[in-house]
Length: 135
Image 1: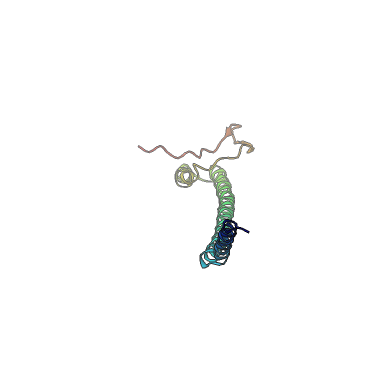
Image 2: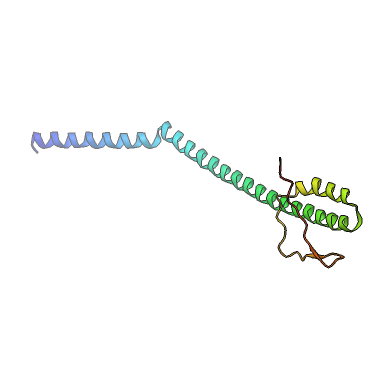
């Protein structure tokens, strides 16, 4: 073999050893291990955040459902009181009920499937849940 060929083989061996050393060093370095640990921790935190967001969404969904049921029960109670008040109470008492309770329930939607009540004079009466207009 000629000197040039030996020199080329030594140069190639040094280059391959350098590349192999660089690759082994990168694969076993502390920075690489730290990066993997941080990526794992980030993934765990993201999963925890997603679980938390899901729990918050479920909480507010359930709260809205419960609140709607409660508002409906208050509305039904008001309708019962208003109907009874029409039959049993005098005009000032009826006005107080509408002024106090009607104002609270003004924004609660009334069910469309309610049947109107027929009064003593044969007239249909609807309960007015609109609050008085502010002056």
